[in-house]
Length: 267
Ligand SMILES: C[S@@+](CC[C@H](N)C(=O)[O-])C[C@H]1O[C@@H](n2cnc3c(N)ncnc32)[C@H](O)[C@@H]1O
Image 1 (cartoon, rainbow, N blue to C red):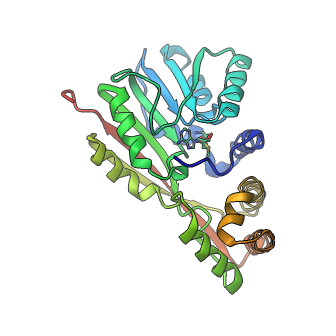
Image 2 (cartoon, rainbow, N blue to C red):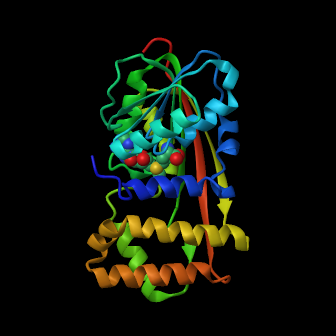
């Protein structure tokens, strides 16, 4: 297990702000998945609880039994505050997805959004999702592929830093394309996937993503500094990336993956 690189209270505000960006539109993302009346659902790696809140407001009549977990106490505490503010009943608990604190065959659905990209061994989470889902239960994964690195700039120094980060990060920012395999390895059947390109090609979207990156870099400062080697390199990288990103001649895109799998009726 590795520590989430952006962990802390400020990441809660960043996640809430990110929710205003069209590129991270949860209501569109949830169109890819179905919930059935009475489902017991786990939001795995809940952060500030945005996914749970969006599911609840969309399926207010469905009497879903929602639970949300995260290995960060700050995250679960903040998520619990949001849930009580919105008057929704959700059980929250602290747990690492590599070893989820839940019995076998507990849930009908497990949803995990933007979490596997932060794990060292995300396939372990897929095995855990399989274990805690009931026979016939479904897992819904949403994750990005290419974040940070699907950026074309001709600045040599920046490209040197990016190569160094790509080789040095302990987590995988190209996890989206691998989630299918994780589900097969864990035993899921009926595995389906869909990929959507996210383009930061309008001034508004680009501006919001530049601001988002500034927050991400500040939160992940120690991890980036460790890979690049010094605080000066961190500052230099951050300055270069943000200025190159804001330049209209360069482009940034991600691929967003939606992957689902079903636990066979006989495990
Ligand atoms: C980018 S945030 C996404 C939060 C939320 N799913 C959302 O879509 O807004 C990633 C979250 O995953 C959590 N996380 C990362 N690795 C984890 C692990 N091994 N076990 C549990 N939670 C983890 C982090 O603490 C963080 O809250």
